[in-house]
Every structure is written in structure tokens, then in C-alpha cells.
Image (cartoon, rainbow, N blue to C red; front, side):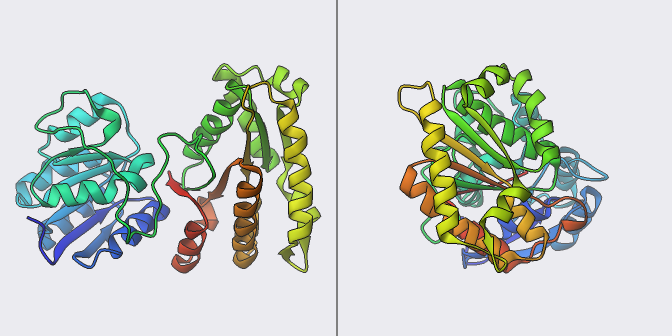
Length: 341
């Protein structure tokens, strides 16, 4: 059973997602994080040293993958329960992971919805599989029923797909995951006959187009119909900023007019507009985190006033990999869902 002090070892090499996990767990007083590890071999050593009650374990780790970590941990720390939280979503990988004796498996994109529920179930001695795997037969586990996060979590539930309603944010240490989610978000809108506004850097816009085409989107037709509207993030910022802060009047006027125009181009019966924005990442990368947060607040006003779907993207790779925990939490608090990859 879950005790008043369950000891947790977090094994995750993505800094953004590790912060997400630790922040979520930190809101539960009965949970104690005894270690954070970013490397597979180190995870085996720490598990043997700390003998935690539960290990929250990623699969894609440096030096030793999470499945092999789990196999070794079963020998060196046999009483430690294991909950996989991974980007891997194939049933073959899930089957192999649970075959190590792990008690649960949650997909990262569902973690906002399922992490704490899964963790509580595993600590009670139960098995948990994310609800997207309902109907599949895995070793010793029943498909978990997701009912949302406990009310004391700072994170709202994540959507089943990135083409979600309202205002979502993604933190990405891997550009591949960033482009995967962006392609899914914009592609879903265009395939449904809706309109997409992409406010991004030139390199991001250039990378997105062939991915959309590969997904079956007739991007040429979408551009001709006015349903795909690309804007440069730096140019957009210069039009919206006054004294290093976003001007609310300019922001709501420029983007509001754009949304009204964009919605008229949609061919869907119930037209919607999907907006991807990278301006907030540029502001944060420039060291102007307060402006990024104000930008996010204005994004909330925009989503509420026009009932649009917004995805904001932060690239945490390379030299800009570190984000202050307080800033991270404040940014998360301005969104209806949080995603990381």
C-alpha cells in the first residue's frame, strides 16, 4: 500500500520532462524524490544504492536503455516497483517493457493525464497501463482508466492528441519530437478543413512543409485557399513589442484580425483556427522570460475571445537547454495542457 513516505527515483534524460515529473510529484506530500538520474548505468547503481519504493523510468536513455535498466534492477533492487514513462508507443515495446516485471506504462504525451493516477496504482501494488492501450493483452496488467489529475497538481490533463482545444505548451529537448508534434497539430487542422497559422522561425517553417506533405496534406492547395498562413516569428515579435514587452492592444488587434480573416478561408462546416507560436521561445532564449510569460497570458485572452487552438513551442536543446524551475512552472501555469519530448 501507499505509505506516508514513498521514496521515488526519477530516471529521465530530458531536463524539461524531468522537471515536469518532479514538479508533479512534489505536490504530493506523501511522495519523496530521493534521486534524479539521466543515465541508464547510473540508474542501476542508484537503484541498488537507494533501494527506492518506485522508479519512474524512461526507455530512451544514454549508455543503457530503460528496458535493460529494468532487467538489472529486478536483480539488484527486487523490491523496487517500476513505472515506465516513455515516448515509445508501439505495443511491442510496451510488451517488452512490462515483461521485465515493471508494474506500469504511461506514454509521455499522456503523462499530464495519467502520471499521478498510475503512480498511486503502482504504489498500491496494482498494475497500470495507459488508456490508449485498452484492449491489448499485456503481461499482468489491466488497462488503466484515466480520470484526470488530482486537484492538487499544478498540471492540467494533457489532450489525447496535440490537436487539442485551447492553449497547450510543448517543451522539447529533441527537435525531432518538436517537429513531430508540430506536424501532427497543424496537419490535423488542415486535414479537417480548418485553417492553420504558423508563427515560427524560417528553419522551422522550412522543415514543416515536407513533413505535412508526407502526412498527406495538400499544402499547395492549403496555401492557395488561405488555410495555411506562415509568419516569421522575429518579424511578428517586432510588430508586437513595446519597450521589451508585448503590447496588449497591438497583440489582440493584429492576431485578432488575422484569426477573423483565417476563419473565413476554412472549408470545414464548423471552422476553427489552429495557431502555432514560437515567439515565446525567442523571448525566453533572449533572456526576456517575463515578456514570454506576458505573451502567454495574452495567448489565453486570444484563445478565450476567439475560441482558437494554440500550441506554443519551446526548444530546450543545445546551449539554451536550461530553464529556471520557477520560470518553467509559471509558463506551465498559463496553459491548459503541458507536453514534453
